[in-house]
Image (cartoon, rainbow, N blue to C red; front, side, top):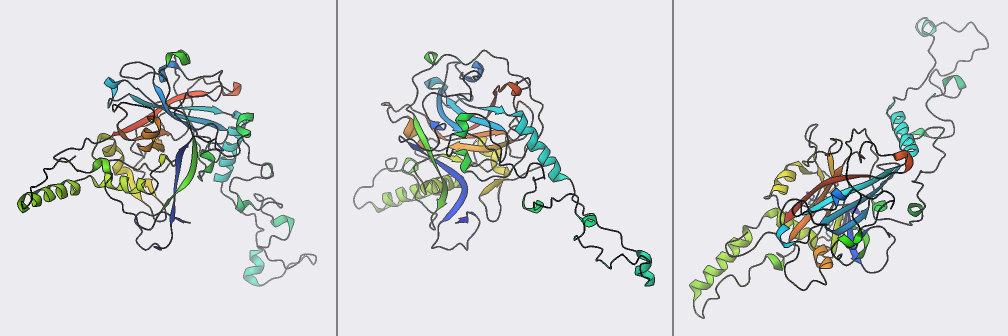
Length: 440
């Protein structure tokens, strides 16, 4: 399928388009990924190395929070030798709603030092210039038309690679180096290396393994996290109902238009005119039209996009771009200037200088740029609160998670012993707009 380009106007109307965004759906039936889940209690890469207690608490009331989502973030193509888990939690206290720190996200990473070092060596080799060794031509003969005095020397093409003396010292005779920029003679014959955790190897297919991305790595200078271990499960509130996560790439139908969602429509805020009162009816219609035309265009795009797959609870695209609920709130104003559209792809983050290339705050642990990885869609609220009887539930439009682009771990993490490093990541919450008479 074609890759989605939001700026393209000449797409075949008879074909669906597929984007690079991976959508997640809540399911009560087991899926291929037995790590990722919506709701429930969190689980860890290694129970011997749980996250610090400082990541469990709401920053407003200091109470323990409830898990919204846990995601298997293994990306061997991008972070070789790294096992990753992503978590988003929320406080359920009414007084904490809409306050910064009431929704938090963090990441756990376990690094295999052997695989990570091998991947770095491959990348270093791939950056070295490839120079073909060729024999120097006899300039005297070339200029003056002379011939070789050695009768045993043949008139060979000086640029031929048919003799051992003219072989490329950087290319293997048995492997085509151009087919893999990271290959070398000693490692090319080996299959892709995976973490040695048997639980990871037994998975047939994970949520993150479906994502097609290129590799990248870098250095880090992290700071330590000093905190007691994760609190006991009995100290947490009852969890939200747990769901498995199924995944599939987003496809868009030819018609990319949808009505304004019912939650954002006006139906009872305007007086119904009496029979025969044409003036009152005209006023009501004009007020309603004025309201709908004043809706944030970014919100309308958000609603249009989600209408293609209303059941999605998660949107995932590492180093992609979040689908903004609004560009008028603090999060929207922060991220919107860094979004642009590239031909043949969905929205991507546009780099603007060395700092803040995504618009998100830099990693608080190592200082590297943060990148978008995933966001929650409103349907997640419906799934998580299916058993809730009251009306005082979650009221966000989307929750965006930005992660360290280097996948760092705290300094002092004993990677050689399999220790897991825990880092708090950036969460951008776009709250639902309160709709009423007078507009948003």
